[in-house]
Image (cartoon, rainbow, N blue to C red; front, side):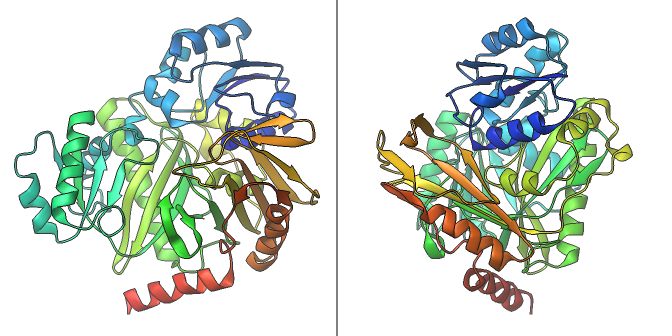
Length: 434
C-alpha cells in the first residue's frame, strides 16, 4: 500500500514509524511544514510546504495516488484537507472539515452536547456579542474564557491561572470576540484532567488507554501553559481515577459521535480525543480534539499491538467492531526536552547533543534540525522521549536517564510520572470525593 501522511512534528514521527512498520505499507508520502529528521528516512517522497494550503497538498497527493491519507495536526483538518483529498478520490483516516468543528469551534461542541442532552458540559454560554457577558460571568463565580477557534493552545484562559478578576476575564473575552466572532464562557471546574483518545469509524468507538498530560512548563505544575511537557499512562487506568470515570468518559464520546452523525448527516472518522476532568461528582468534558494528542500519541502508539494500517483501514471502512485492537499492559512515561526560555522566549539555532543512546527508549523529533551527530533547536518543543515498563517507577527512571543525556540549552520536567506527583493527584481526588 501507498500511504500519505500530512504533518511533520513528533506526533507525525511516531505515526510514520507505526505506518512504515506495517507489512502492508509499501511507500510513505509525507507533506510537512518542516523537514523532520526522524520522518525523512521513512518517506519515499517528502515535500515541505504550508499545511493549510489544501490545493498544494491535493496536488502532492494526486501525483502519487496513495491508498489513503492520515492527517496529524489540527490546522489542516480545520482547513479542509480531508475534503480536498476526497475530491480526488483519496480517503482519509481523519475527519472532514465539518467534523473537525469538534475541535475548531468550542461553541459548536458545547452546543452540540447541550442540544442532544449529553452529560459532561459545565455551565456555559456562547456569546456572539458582549451583551450580558459580564453578568453571566459574575453569576458563575470563577470562570474559564475560551476562544471559539484554534489558537495554538493559547485560546483557553482560566481564572486564577491566566487572569485574576472577572473584569480581566471579560476583557479577554472581548478580544476573542473580535478575533473569532464568538467566545465561550464556562464555570471553572475543580478536579484532575485526563485524556481519553478513541478510534472512531462513524458508528463504533474504541478507546485507547487514559493518559495524563502536563501542560505547565515547570515542575509542580508551575509556569506558563505549553503544548505539553510530558505524559504518563499506567497499565489499565490512571491511579487517581475510578473505573466509573472511564465508563462515563467513554459514554460521552459514544453519544457525541452519534450526535455528530445526526447533526451533520455522516459519521466522524478518525481520532476523537476527549480532554476530561474528574470532578467530585463524576466527569466533565473540557474539550474535544479531532486528532491524536501530542504528547499523548507517544504513550498510546508505543503500547499499540495492533497494526496501525489495519486500524486506519477499519476507520475508513466502518469496520472497527470487527478488529481486535490491543494495547500492551505496561506503564509509559513521555518527557519533552524544550529550549531554554520556552514557551515565551525560547532560544533558537543552538546545538544540542546526546551523550548516550538508551535501549528501549523511543525518541521522536519535533522542532529540531539534524546537524551531523547534533541537532539544532527550532524554538518550540524539541524532542519527545518515551519509555514503557511494567511499572510507572521503572518507565520514569528510564526516560529520565534519556533526557538527562542531552547536553545544551534545554530543560525538561523531572516530576512527570514520579510517585510524588501522582500521590498528590490521588490525595486531591480522595479529598474532593469524600
